[in-house]
Amino acid sequence: MTERSFDPVAETSRHRRVVIFAAGLIIALVAVAAPMIGAQSAEAATTYSRSFTTSQSKTVANRCVRVTLSGTMLFQRKVAANYGISTLVVYVNRKVTNPRVRVYTYAGPCSAKKPRRSIAKLSVTQRWSDHSCNGNLSVSVGFPWGVSVGASPRCGREERAHRSATYGRSSAYDQKNTDTTIRYANKGSITHNPPAFSRNLRGDEKRIRLCQSAVVSMVIYPTASSSDSWSPTFRPCVKYW
Image 1 (cartoon, rainbow, N blue to C red):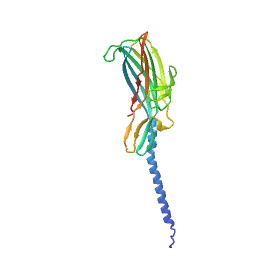
Image 2: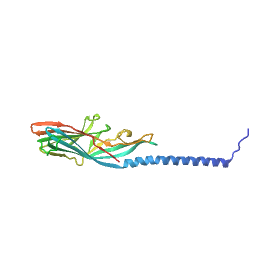
Image 3: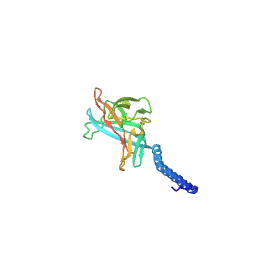
Image 4: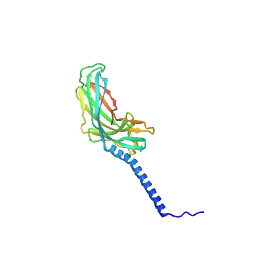
């Protein structure tokens, strides 16, 4: 068997080629990973602000009662998973600011356009819960707001932020909550936060609105000695795009 001679020049050249190849591979991996890291930072740093208004009407106690719920949702987006083509972006740091309830009473029924008509008294309670059944709630102010555990429209028993008030004779009521912020806690596992965007392995993309849930419970007193109740459920949704 012929012995192979050692050539120091050739070995040095081969070693250099291996080092250069490894360095190039590292640079390529960093270049691929950088957009993912950058996307996470950019998404988390951007705060979106979206206003919402939604209304419902119903004939209650011989009055046409119209309820309007409004406010502003604040939120951020963050990449939760990124595996090449497959991507998941979720909503984080969700808030509802300045939640507002307006109630107008008209001569009933609601099927016909009628002038406004006063009632003797109105009791209103608004209850906010997490539409995605994902988190705990907190409120930026104290009384008259509070947080308690109760039944929500979608999630069974969970925390709800609520405020109650009773008003006298009128046909127009406005429960303003300026400088009030309802905060929704992030989940410990980021992928359990509400989805905002997804792309599967086939490349199919889906953009998803952010929604929350609120119930406005009312007791309507057309006269001092008579009353009826109505508790409509609202699902305000906003888009980031």
